[in-house]
Image (cartoon, rainbow, N blue to C red; front, side, top):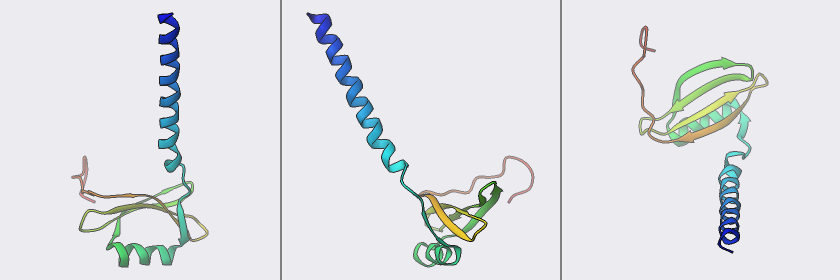
Length: 104
């Protein structure tokens, strides 16, 4: 009987673990916020005090990291059609010293 109870408890733990993992994954899968580049950049600058820090190209467009003096940051991508999407944001932005070459 104790084997059956242990098996049931393991099954319940797995169920709750799976449920918790799904609850955490749902917000991460939310659609990015997008709009015309001009409006998004105005919002980042005026509302959050962020300015571009770094940029790079990928197959989808121009990726940028915006940051403010207070440490807030936003990662964006601008598609070829001029639409800019916010991919993530947070706090405690810090500049790292370059690992090689000249400072950026």
